[in-house]
Length: 123
Image (tube, rainbow, N blue to C red):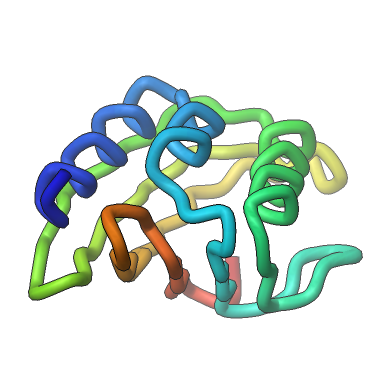
């Protein structure tokens, strides 16, 4: 798959809420994920497919998702950007909020090798 095809498939799966399927299908076993800040009980940088699956499971289990929008991809060479918008209620606060974030994905050897998230730190 080309970088654009990988990006389009990622966007399609995420739009359907199939994030784990996207990870299984498109991510390198040695994926590196960098958040703008560390999540509870997790490092800011996660390495390896199992860590990424765990992070995704944590997110799904700890947030009530009312709506999600995924836009892109916006490719450039071996990278692409995807825009995410989520209307969520974190279960620990009960406070509904909108999260806007961008993610820069790097593709190597036909798989997503790195994801870097950018978002408002005051969410």
